[in-house]
Image (cartoon, each protein chain N blue to C red):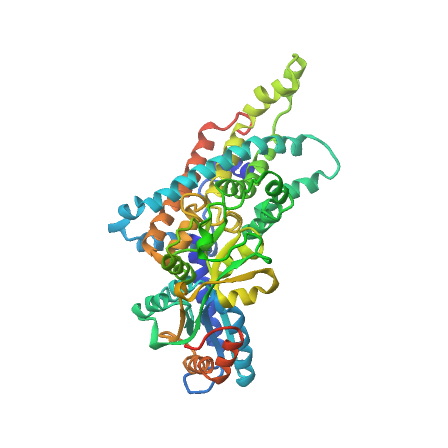
Length: 285
Length: 254
């Protein structure tokens, strides 16, 4: 949903600009918009102001920082891959297959997007914990334990991130012109071939947008991770967890790590927009 | 991070609102809201003491905020609206004192000892600190700045035991939950936490040679808005009734 709206907004914005010319907003709108902008800008300015710049490089290259950064990248990228592998088929089913209770299934699959992450963590415990519905038998019969492992971090991140991809791809599929697919089928292409060679390329922008949003969400995951995976440097302590705990012991490190996360997230958003402007699909243009 | 900052800003905003609304002043009357930031291990006992305090001072209201002493200390240094700070160790209190965040000098009001918390029935058969070194055992503790993390590390060092924790939790209650929920096998926690866990956990004693005494200091903060009520609260905790409730929960006298 988010993805699809954003896919179109740059194009739409351009049209409005051309059509309406210099449309000056009334001053109350300007003032309120200014306040809103300040509200968003001030925390980041505050962050920039508080960061101990003299020590920044040393704090950033400390082993504990690098460890958290590495772990965050590995886990968030793994979660993104999992989200794509399972989320694209899910989005396809939600968009195309008609079955009873589809709305309910969709609500269930994207629930974790609006759920407080810590509740997600508790729910993951109930399912995959050592006393959980699935985790219990796994541990008792095979000695496999998920909690307190890097796998738990990846699961927690996938849990909260995949909905972003699913909604984006589903919206992309719904907005798709079906004729090329029908033509491919008429020309004798198999369902699988059509999906791979016609459908997927056509939803690529939505897929990329969804994947990037999912990745950003996974990178920032905190609540479900600390609840379900615990916190151990090098194993389950991702950047957000490191920031949270460093705040108690080494504020400088917390600020520097925060700045890195802000920079990455900002870069993602800016990059995303360029990507859409540059490589949008024909039907969106 | 940004969220944390926003949350902190909101907290500060809400706090000062609440305080402005309270008619309390520095005129000696015990009225209005006292905001107490207290170590997580004080949750049950401070809740009970607050009820007793409010019964004695009907015009006063106590707002309790529990967390790791390290987290609370960091919040107070950042200007969080606490009237009283009660830490589970001297180190985190010292952090606030050093930052000029305390008025007067902190006073130790209670002590606590350590025990090993295990699942009911002690399924892993843990008899002492040495058993925590078993690589197959899921041992959890708290992050290094959190008092219980420091105390546990001290006890293990005294005993010459090296452990490999599976997680460093944010505060002692989170540590306790990991064991009582069955996700972890053992943890070193306060004796009072074992009592509070009731039937969901079981304590294994730590011999006095390796025992660590946890001292709990409390102080009125430098920027306390409701100074008279804060002082009354501190006096109440140190007084007869406070001591009795602390003792009932298993805390030692200073």
